[in-house]
Length: 635
Image 1: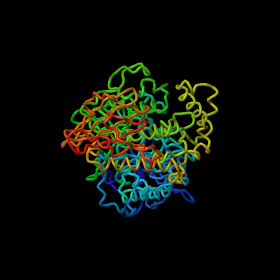
Image 2: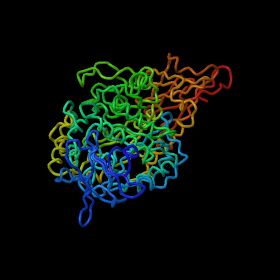
Image 3: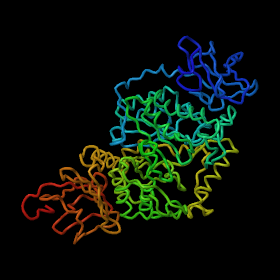
Image 4: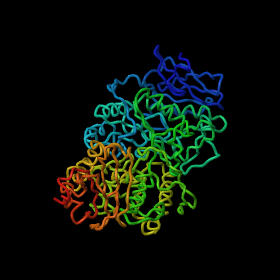
C-alpha cells in the first residue's frame, strides 16, 4: 500500500515497488467503487472510501504493469479511468497500467528551453508523416533542427475518439493517444528531439472535454459548471463548489507532462474559455506547476487568448499569471489581408497597411483597447512593458489554414515574391516566430478540419463547420458548400498529410532555403538575435513599403526594409531612420529576392540616385565604413 502523499498523481493507477498497483479515483457521490481487472474471469478489487473529499483508493495485489482495468461504480456500470495513462484500444475500452519509470532517458544534460531566441514549429503528429506516428516523426528531427527550428509545439496528443482528429476533442487528459504509438514512443520522440537540440512543448486543452468518450460526469457531476459556456462543450469547474479535486487533477496534468515525458512546456488552448474567479487563477497555478516539475530545466508556457489579455503574461507580483508568451492573432490577420486582398469576417478590422506591421513590431498587439467593430466591443489590453519575445508571430497555424474553403496555405493565396517577402518579415520581427508544419517548404498539402466521430456527432460537426465558415461572406454562398471537405471523411485527413519529398523540388526547395537562411541570419546576427532589446523603430515609406530599424549599443544597427508593392524609387528620402550611422553606409546583407530563392537578384538599395527598393521584397542591411569622404554608394 502507498500513502496518498507518495503517489505521483492525485488519481489513476500507479505500480507499487513492493508489488501490485495502487488505484485512486474521485467519485464523491458514489457509494462504492471497484477496480475491474481484465481477465477470465474478471477480478473485482473493492476500493476504500477515504475520509476526505470523496476519493476511493486501494491496492490491487494481482495487478501489474500492462494490466487492463476499468472502474465499476456502485456495483453496476463500468468505465475506463479518466486519469488513465494509456488507452490501448481507444477511449471507451479498458485502461492500461503504465510505469513511467521504465523508460531509459538519455537527456540528463538537457537544460530545457527559455523563451528568448526560440523558433517554434507547430506540428500535428497524425499528418506530419504518412505513417502519422511518433516513430515516423522522429526521423525528421535532424531536418527540423538543421532548418533552424528550436521548439516543437505538438498539437494535442491525449486520447480522443475515432481514427483521426485534431486532438482538441480529447477525453483522457493523461493518456497519449494510441493512434500515434505508445507512451514510450512519445518519450523516445522527446528524448531524440533533445539529442538534436530541439525542445518539445505540448498543446493542452483545459477549457473543455470532447463529447464522445467523456466519462468525467459518471464519476462526479462537479467536474463541470453551468455558470459558463464554451463553443465546444461544458466548461470545466475550476472555482465553484467542490472544485478542489478538479483543480488538483488538471494542475497535476500540467506537471505530469513535464515530469513523465520531459516536455519543455505547454501551449494552453483557448484560455479565454478557462473560467476561474478564485484568488489563485488556475492559469497561474498551472504555470507554477510547470516550473516546479521542471526543476532547473527551462520551460515555456504559451497561451492562446482571443481577447488579448496581457495579464496572462504579466509576472505574479503584478497580478498576472506569469505565462511566457501569447499568440499574436493581430499580426496574422494583417499579414493575411495583405497576402490575400480580403478582409471579411474576423479580418474586417485589419487593412494590411505598412503602419500595422510597424506597430506590431514595436508593440506586439495592434488592438490594445480600441473599438473593434467586428465584435462590437473594445478589444485587447495595453502591452507596455511586455518583452517583445512574448508575442508569438506567424502567418500559418492549424486554425487559420483550415479556416478557408479548401484549407489553403498562405503561399497559395499570394504570388511567390510577395509570400517570400512576408515570410521573411515575420521571421525577422522581434517577437518569437512560429512556423506551421510544411510551411518551411511551401507544402502543397492543404490542412483541413478533420474529426472522426460517430454519425450523430459527425453531423453536428459538419453543420458547425458550415456555420463557422459562414461568417465569411464569400463562403456563405450555397455554391461554395461543395468546396468544403467533409471533416468526417478519412480522405480529408489523408489529404492533409505532408509529402516531405517535395522539399527538394523547385519552389519548395527555394522556400526551404529562404527560411533556413533567414533563421540562420536571425540566430547568428548579434543585432537581430537580440530581438529588439536595444530598441526598435519604424517608418512608413508609402502605401506598400516600410522600414524597421533595430538599434544596437555600438550603433551597429540593422535596417529591415519591406516593400509589398512595385519597385519604389525614394527620392527625396526625408526619413531619418534611413540615415546610416555616422561615417558609414548601408550594405544589403540579405534579400528575399536572392536568385537561389527564385528571385530576380539583389542590386544596391541606397544609391547615388537615393533609395531604390525592389518590389515585393524584404531586405536586411547593415552599416559598413565609407571608403572615402563623399559618397561611394551603389559601387
